[in-house]
Image (cartoon, rainbow, N blue to C red; front, side):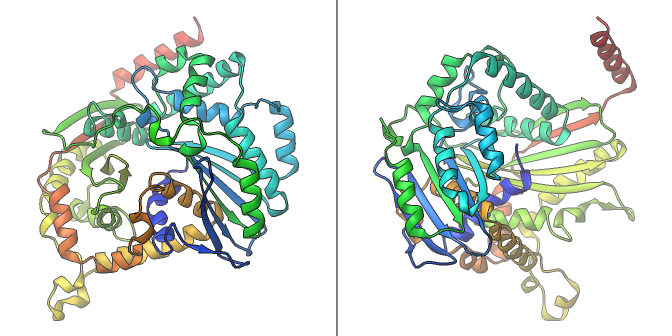
Length: 481
């Protein structure tokens, strides 16, 4: 149910979209890009943006609940809720009736669970937008499911967990975050713990649901082909009467502290049934509200993306490239962040790859990132990594936000943790801030977070022949008990 590339861009595009207009902005003229931000009496925040280029309406809904709100005894309840809300019936409609109605109106409905929030997305032809709002309200605020349905979904969730455990990138990511955030909610897997999910009952899940699924704990964003005045009126009619018995700030959330840097390096080695070795190296990084976040958006692009990622440089050894691939992923979370480096290689090159990577990262605080760092006569033969990253972010951002659902999700995700913060209305536009960042800023951030800092190193190697044979025998025994 997740699109990793899209989720990764939500953080960047949220700033691109919102810091140029401000949450408090309102352009109520009809037509393309008319927009309005409002807060209903029950404290649910709403953002509307009209676009008349495609006859579709995209509705995104975000709830401030994620794996951060779970504890060891509830790890997995958010994931279960995602499944039953997305696929289950409601208090007034059976699954069969809902699916029939949705198919007849061309509705696409999906959901995602994250560390900080849960999001729902609904796309449908513009002539059915009123139905889309009504359907979303029914699905989100009128949940009903049986024990039989729950047990069926548990089997699907267990299969998803098995897929995660068999994927070296996903497993490496989980182990890296676990090592970076010890004793923190972010160290728990988003998909949950099997033993908790297995024991979870209907009443337990419904109690968790009632605690967090309140209008004051949610945001709604609608982007597409509609008239602002009509959409505002209908949104108020449909979602306004929903009572918010307590305010979002009064929800009994677990105490979540800001993440702290680890005090020593953490190394973990695993074996999986794979053909090549995977190395995942993680560092503490700025959180979503940190001033250094925007610099790390650039660092992520400079080091691991684009046509010529900087991190390829250290692995050209003795006239050959000793790795198969390298990429990065930046996690700017609400209570801190992580920067992960992913490398695949032949197992025989692991030792050298580790050495070259750590050596290179130790010098990132002194590297040249822009042609401005070189004398004029040398600028024609060097690559401007900083300018290339700026251009890539701008281009990718424009492509991303032109898709209505991407824009709607970005609006909903950006508003959710900031709707009570005044600085969200007046923050300098994202692209203006990016243009002001120079090489010294990149070097300072690289030195602060990467050069000489403690790290988590996850190594996932192919299984030895003996382990592979044992696994095959175990599988045969399961097939023929």
